[in-house]
Image 1 (tube, rainbow, N blue to C red):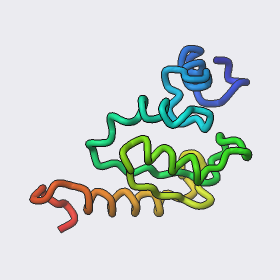
Image 2 (tube, rainbow, N blue to C red; image 1 turned 90 degrees about the vertical axis):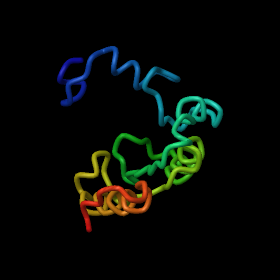
Image 3 (cartoon, rainbow, N blue to C red; image 1 turned 60 degrees about the vertical axis):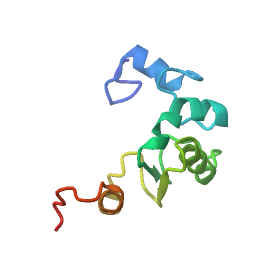
Length: 120
């Protein structure tokens, strides 16, 4: 894709894969049905998962109910843990501390017992 389209390099295939309805990488769109989300994400149900969602993601249109979407994503993944980062941008570069804290907390709780815990 030309740099005028976006500063981040991306191939035409990748762009189409992300943006096409039900494209190869269309995993998180608000217009996917619950069944479509379950088909794409349901394989995660047997693995402890945490969904960290940027509530001010600049790539998510304003009309999308972000709280409802993250709830649907978590349900499709077999009730994954949800973390909503208020005011977080797409990359969470403005809320790094909150995201890292959530990840460390999750790993401490969800990791197999008896693992070599680097925090102890």
